[in-house]
Image 1 (cartoon, rainbow over the protein chains, first blue to last red):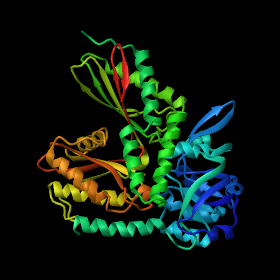
Image 2 (cartoon, chains in turn yellow, green; image 1 turned 180 degrees about the vertical axis):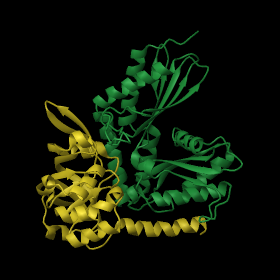
Image 3 (tube, rainbow over the protein chains, first blue to last red; image 1 turned 90 degrees about the vertical axis):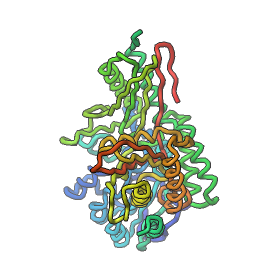
Image 4 (tube, rainbow over the protein chains, first blue to last red; image 1 turned 30 degrees about the horizontal axis):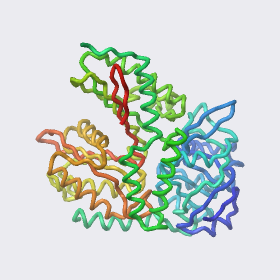
Length: 192
Length: 295
């Protein structure tokens, strides 16, 4: 398990290889469909400092407010491929070092990871209680009223948040490899 | 004698049903996951991912927090005794849904498709979503499925014949569609999943048939020997795809395959796949005037 402290340098990210297991620590930002469309079209400045050299996490959490403070109750990853049209540009625009979600992403993102010096962290889907427990503090939230709870951008501090590098900055994608192998088996089974 | 519905008591029982569905993985699914973990090579990503999922399921149960933050489309199949008011049932379930959202058993998950506004309490147009049947018992049966978005997005519907798959209008054609659909899904629906399959019907009843299969226990057997054979064949072959837990590779791509069939038009032959993620959240409540039980 490789420990990563956020924010993280390009040099440290370039050391990571496909298949590496990591433990993330520090401050990151959640953002999913509405957030990506917003960052892609409007290029808002208010997230610039928050995203520099850290991770954007594709997650729509279950949250609870007690004593005027937000808590993450459940916070697993959502499917990343929906952000494929936007992510490459968002990575470069904001200098993001890690994209975290589930299911992996496509060629455009893989290219941007390579050019910018960033990786894709795969979190286990549906393991939301454990991942919610790894979120130690909620530092703030952006666009809560307009986007709603799942789609808002939550500024969170995590401790020992576990993930696997499935797309690295050297052009490798575990998702591409698994797909190529399973396509072959599927075609044999179907007889095409 | 007519069934007396105490609306407040029924509402509270439904809140508990939602809590159980969201925070407790059904025993048969837990067992299938444990078997899958033990089958995967020690130290492999598949093995450690399944172990993490199981630890999460344990933690969710202990803490009474959602297994997955996507608490899904809330789909109800409700079976009522003669004479019970559906209006009262729906209003009580909607109230229970609001309470469960407030208790963080559910994420606010109902978005207005026109304005983009989240209703904030999981109620809205067709939310929750109800199916009804009537029976001759003095009990209301409420089956609840929390159907996550990731696995709903990889669910699919084919129509036969399909020239790309060389699939004809028969059970072998159905087999080919499902192999294709699960391969396309890869890890996106949070594998290892459960394939609920509906053969025939129209586009709606075919998918309802598929969704209903997801209420079956993973270790049951199909009453139709032909469909039982198809289930076994698909289960064996889908697990040859090597997609594995979360699509990281491995021996376990599906935990179960369940097939049902509905009559179709001569002109149509639909194959519907309702894919459930490994967090296959379902719970059934039996509610009578004197007692409530959950399964």
